[in-house]
Amino acid sequence: MAVTRAPGAQHPSPNPWVAALTPAVHGALDRSVAEENGVSPDHVLDFSANGNVIGPPEAVGPAIAGVDVTRYPDRRAAMLARALEERHGVTPSAVVVGNGSTEMIWSVARAYLAPGDVALVVGPTYGEYAAASAAMGAEVCDSAVMNDVGGATPHVAAREDEVAASVRRRLEHVRPRVAWICHPNNPTGAPFPVWALPEFAAASPGTLFVVDEAYLPLCDALASALPAVAGGRVVMLRSLTKDLALAGLRVGYAVAAPGVADALRRVTPPWSVSSVAQAAALAALADDEHARRARAAVTAARAHLSDGLQRLGLHPRPSVANFVLVRVGDGPAVARRLLELGCAVRDCTSFGLPECIRIGVRAIHEQERLLAALASVLRNEG
Ligand SMILES: Cc1ncc(COP(=O)(O)O)c(C=O)c1O
Figure 1 (tube, rainbow, N blue to C red):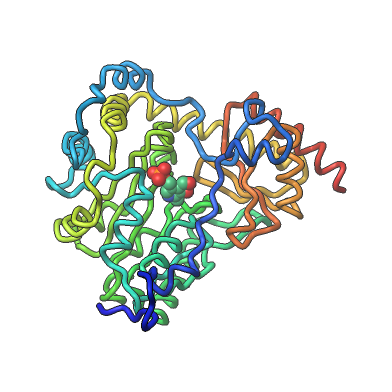
Figure 2: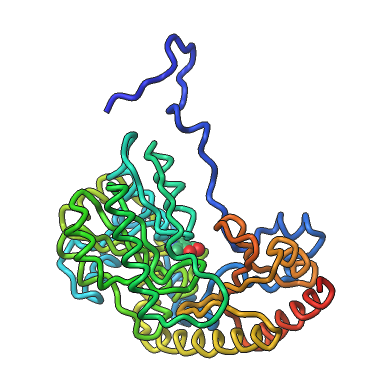
């Protein structure tokens, strides 16, 4: 596709849409942010990123200590891809491994989006879908269908029907080339109606549906988009940074039908997953018991956190994930005050929810500290 650039430019100029790009906003406490707020990052409990409560499996340490870092890693992480294909019971070559699932988001955008295309973001949600789509020059249509914040506990099945109907309408209206879906959704903690994917695919024949299941392995008995992948219109994304607590190592993957997986491989750089990350992931995946313990710990911690928030008079959004969204009034102000008290939470302004914060689950005694700090902030605010 030809791209129109400024005529007669003396120097090579970036693509015309690049100047308008803005980076996605993320949780996870940066040292610089803590220091700017006058707190020592070493003394802050980080509830702004979403983890698994119990940390990585023990086998990870010895596995990475034995890696020969003088050698290049396998350029496509072939052993890890094979292990993941076996785990999911999918055909050989269905898995494409990347530097976190975020790299796979960018690979999908690179392979499928170009100027003139429309990408539908089923939001409010993770910011990298819009960022990657915009970076390819596509038009981003942000649709806040998952936005149901606070209030009484909705009946999940009824809500899923509403979400499905709303997505169907958006698809008919927008006819996107790519539809980005997060299941369960960050930051709302709500499941997406994956049962409706075949119907969506039939109704919108030109659309590739990307279902990001970064948090799904930490949820109890939540249906996956995996059965829809074989049809060739759905890509499932998974991350190892959440359930296996390997955020610093950067491993994620896509599961796709052969033609789609081939396209993703063509646009993903070689060696993007380091030898250390590949060794850690293989060791961690072998520990099924750890995954079960992490799920149980997340479920218990989420119940403790939600109960504690309710005791403070708040209405946390029902969540199936390892984080909870709650309306607190002035989200940025509450997040700032909590940081001064040694607890980082995610201010949700970038999701279009400035009245909310998102709290990732942690150990119960750490959550007690957060709840005490929040009680003090709310007392002083009120
Ligand atoms: C929905 C979602 N997908 C993906 C990611 C990032 O995953 P990874 O670390 O595998 O790039 C995040 C991180 O916050 C997320 O919220």
